[in-house]
Image 1: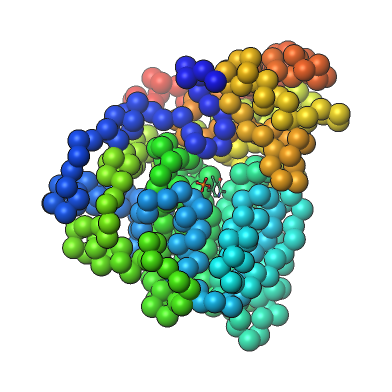
Image 2: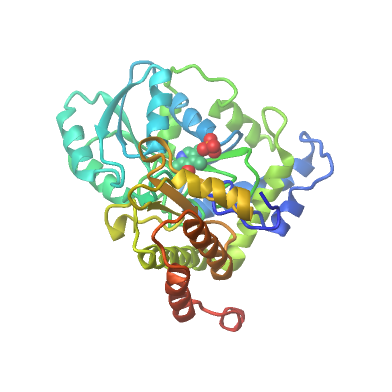
Length: 396
Ligand SMILES: *Cc1c(COP(=O)(O)O)cnc(C)c1O
């Protein structure tokens, strides 16, 4: 791997220098007012990024996986039923985590390449006349397949079924890169991680928790200690933290939100949509297709490219790393070998994405895949030439 090249994996993402510097703090006493001064802007910033109304932001020393665990253990009890669709490796892992905590997971098997099926969620909730299902889990952006799910559509399904379950959303690879509307979509817990859209090192699980989820916390009986929201909230109220916080990462989080808001969240989302569209044009230029079944399902943060017959996506990823010092993502689980993934989230620009597309093309040619050098790059170039807002325009 070359430390000069950007990475094209869907997390951890490339880190802007300003954020790396912001993480570099002298030791601070977390029981002093200095910590509260650091922490408050980070928490308030996350609240704006998630578009919360009410509720609380919880920042844990963990990664996204710890965020999943915190969400379920703080709100559910042993034997509770949860409803989840399985359509990729990340939705699968959250289901597995729930089972290991003694929850009864009702799984809606969904082809990989599809998103969470709102109609089947509605039917399952209607059938649950006894109200056994306590939570619906949804992975907003399935990072394994590059598929986005319609969270507003799932909220609509839950409302039509008249079901009172909580709605938990894994937004680890979407939040801060794709529009997210926690309050409007009626999300009860949103889970994010520091190392994706927030462009930080790994190490923080970042959660938005609704008032309804906070009420569930009072009666939940799953064992929890390190991730107990009650301890967190008690300490926050006193301007502190229940144990030693990752102060550097928290300082970086405040800086990250500042950068996102300086660019403007709508502009951040538009940039991700533009970068993603260029990647999709390149994929079409190669004569290939994304794993996402239909264009409306295509993620703006990661594209899983289905490789030509007889080719292996893992070979491309290995060659890109070994020969060119560039990281792409391998296929996971059911699509191992069948896809390679291009991450296009975080601090990337059109120019950087073009370098990734050019590298992928060189690897395909090196491996003897039936791809014409330049075919994808040119398609992306044409698109970016016509869509980039331009630096002068941005400065006006
Ligand atoms: C990265 C990711 C996670 C969490 O992974 P960690 O390695 O624990 O941070 C969870 N869900 C999705 C959709 C992801 O992309």
